[in-house]
Image (cartoon, rainbow, N blue to C red; front, side, top):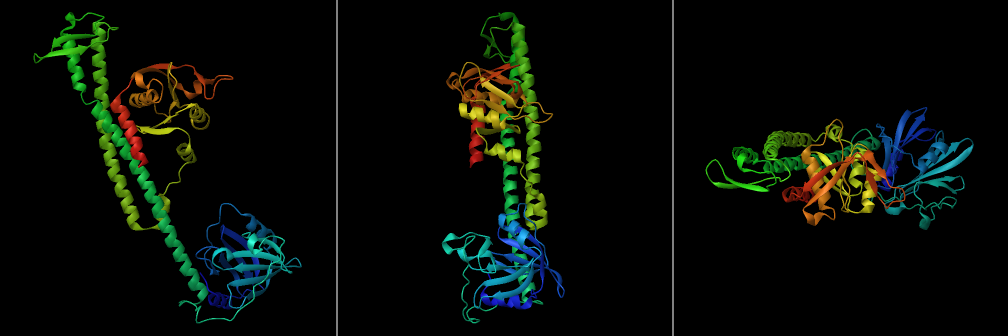
Length: 467
């Protein structure tokens, strides 16, 4: 922050009288650059920053980034100050106040810069009679409002001993100050970029770890696939002893030990044998794919960890800014939306917990190609599996979503339930129906027997993501 003697030093180096304000560029709420021109100095830039811990002004060689939106005060400056000629420059003796007297279209205006700490900081535009025309920050308690009379502060003795000009090097104090604050600004931006990159790293690595946990749970759940084949082989060997309608059969395995095989009474003997073989093939495929996925994910986790370590160790602002990805709006909306969020094999699952959330999910979050699940004959939450372009939903993801649908419904205590599932675009709202009430069309049926290990994995991974 500048003191009064440093402001005097800066002004003594500048030749502002007679210069024209050609353009005003806003960088953020507190900072602006005036593009100046004079016969002696030609084109040059004057940077102002007011109301921050680093508030200052100086001649600069760098045009900082323009703000995306223009505030009201800047709009006023552009309409009424651009094109003005600086008639005179003054500083209140011993104070951190600079006044530019401007002339434009036969009108005289004054532009006051108050480099005070706290609420005293401001930029104020008045007419020649000191009536306030516009100001950066309205401060009614200080009498700083449009239409009020601005009372100029009285000066005081210069105190160079108490407020010395800081030691500086270079061709001018302006050049030194510009370099000092640009370096400080760059250091702050580098720190912010590093923080943003760390947050991105943590999100990405946490996502990969969650996928690894999901894949390991699938591998563990399907690990005994060989036992299913052995059961099918045993049942095939003793098929002559089985009768349709039985719920089980007691035989001996290939080592001679007694074993009980569970049967589906609704299936024929060959149907039960085929069901065991199909389950074996499915579990073997799930296990093989899970092991491959674990291998690939662990390699990716190591590669991405090293990538971020190398990037952060370079301490390069440009490299870090380039690496930080802008979060898509759709993702931000999803994170802030209603319902509970789960992840299964890279697919997002959203669960509503009541009629209001069900309705909000369908209105605000769900897309036409997402998949909707709901328990038959039991009240419960809507479950949405977010679709992915050109990707079908794996059976394991469907089973995860089905278990969540039962868990967050009135069928929770039953341990088993039938579900509807269909694309969101095939849902029809019921006219004058209750909030969130829909009727599915082109629906399919899914019978879910609650898998406690699967549920525990889903609920645990959700709690871990909260930590």
